[in-house]
Length: 175
Image (tube, rainbow, N blue to C red):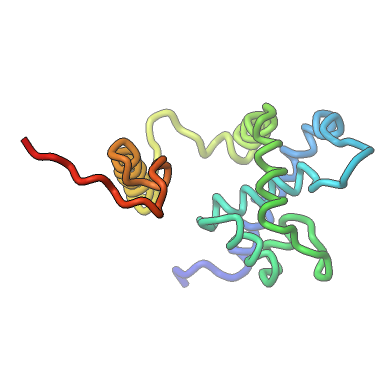
């Protein structure tokens, strides 16, 4: 009886859905200003934000994997607002649209609206915070790789090197 029931898990998901719905509804007027009625159709900002939240909450590593999940995961489709037969976005289109949205101030406003929600605010504390250790490891690993790539570029060995691959490297003279 200590295991959470399927009903309590569904209730938590519905609560998350309700919190996100309320936060997005409070910003309807600002989302309306982002829509354009000419040019190529883009992905609705609300859907971009919902998909980005899923990527963060479920630790989906890339946009390509997120779109793959959206192909077959009905919960992801439901949360984002896609029907069962709706086409899933191309990962590069999703990324471009999301990046364009993140250059506005909307992501901060959405997070502020979520954190200010009446069901979320009591869960926040200035005294305590939690961090997923796997994320810290991944960030550290990424930082090490970035530093190594920078060193290689400075030495002329990395992909940004100006040396042409068809020309052999000149031998170094040793003192």
